[in-house]
Each structure stands twice: as structure tokens, then as C-alpha cells.
Image 1 (cartoon, rainbow, N blue to C red):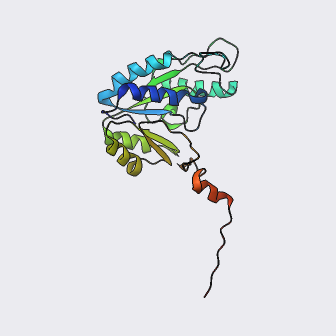
Image 2: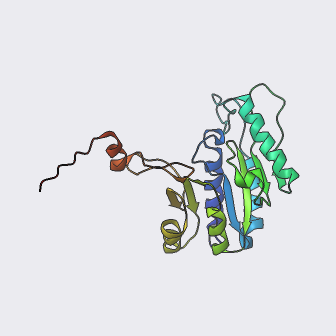
Image 3: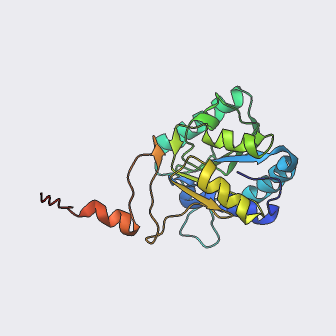
Length: 220
């Protein structure tokens, strides 16, 4: 969620990095970008610029930012999600075309005006495709964020740390919620989701408890 008081440059740089991690093929990579309308146009322009500046190619080559997808069928499925979203009214701002080259490559792609009922809204885009969703205000952004069958990771961008903490802790339905940063796993922090993103936690002492037997002793 990108609120009206977010640091735009930092926010976009962070969001682009999160979207393209591991070619976008990460469960905690950012997929849906919910942006309040007052910041929407600026966010879209800068986001597209940053995405288009990333170099796609052989990940073993210096200066490459985005490698291929794991398999061609996964790339083709992702492309189908993009095409169906556009057919349903999403605006394609960048990318969206399978390149004529060897390998399961898919370019950095940006969809705007994404709405409920589109694959880019309802489904997970497991690749370098960003879905920008407009929101009227903070309340609407929270509603949209929670309008998902998934609940693994979320992030809130705002210059007001107390506001961000409140939203992250009390309003967002996700197992992990970060403020002014992208979601990442860390062995010191419990990690896991809710809803159809699973249950239980790994990492930290919560994760260690999954590997031990807890003994009950009852004495009357």
C-alpha cells in the first residue's frame, strides 16, 4: 500500500526491487501495488521508468537485473494472465510481450487500472508483472489489500511511522507486514501466512518449536 505521504522515490525503488527479486518468482515478492489516487499518476510514471531501466538477460552476465522464468510453461501462463487482464480493462503501461529469444524470458511488465475480477487482481502473478490498483484513500487501500484469498506478506509506505505501524499491526490481514520496506525472511523473525497462504510459522523461536516435542505432565 502506497499512501499519499509516502517518499515517492524510495517507495518506487523499493517496490521495483521487490517485484523483480528472483525474476518475480518469489512467494513474498510484491505483486499488487495499491496506490492512493492523489499519488497515482506520479507513481505510475516513475514506476514504469524504473521497470524499463532494468536489463533482462543472462543472469551470469554483469549488469543484468532480470533473468528468465523457471520454465516456459510458467512464462506462458503468466503471459495469459496479463492478456486476460488487459482484455478485462487493465492498461498495459510497459512490457507484456514475449521476447523473440531463446529461454523462458518475460520482460518487466506494468499493468494499471487493475480491478477485482481480473487475474492481476485475484490471482498471484508469479513473474515480473506488477499490478497497480487505485485506491481512494487509506481506508480503501486497506480494504483492497485485505480483499484477497492470500495473506502472506504486505507492506505499507508512509512517512508517518506510527501510522504505518498501526496499519501493519492492526489493519492488514497478512502474516508479515513491513513498513517502508519490502517483505523479506530473516532467521530472527517468525515467517508464515494466513488464509490460503498457510498456517504456522518457521524461523525464530516459533519455528524451532515446530521441531520439538512438548511433554505434558499432569499431577493431581
